[in-house]
Length: 187
Image (tube, rainbow, N blue to C red):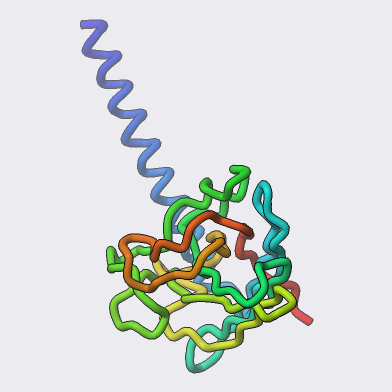
């Protein structure tokens, strides 16, 4: 009898906890969907053994999300995979705590122009002779709201070039820099 009561209480507690967690998730999504912001920002910090750093800005436009980035301390004249990862967690020294590419629709890895791709697939950054990479393009897949929201996710710059084909990551190698996407202060 006592075991039945304990089991009932545990089951009830788990159901209550699951309901609270779902309500919290719904509240977070509602807050993001109702947010009045048009710019997100990421400050990239080097992972252990790297010096790569930079800033990535995301702007809401009528055509999609404009991605503007400048990354420095990269190997000169080289390409580097550039992705949004599933977690905004850069606590691991090698950046692996950011998880895999952000892929809420279970799509194959591809390039940013492909119809079927991870939401987080942003292609490659190409460093100049000074090891600086600039990028400025509009991505129609990225979003600030809903299940495709990039808010709170991680941005990773990889050591090697993304071949835009190899599954599931593009064979871009180690993680050189990691940053978390947050709401930018309005100017």
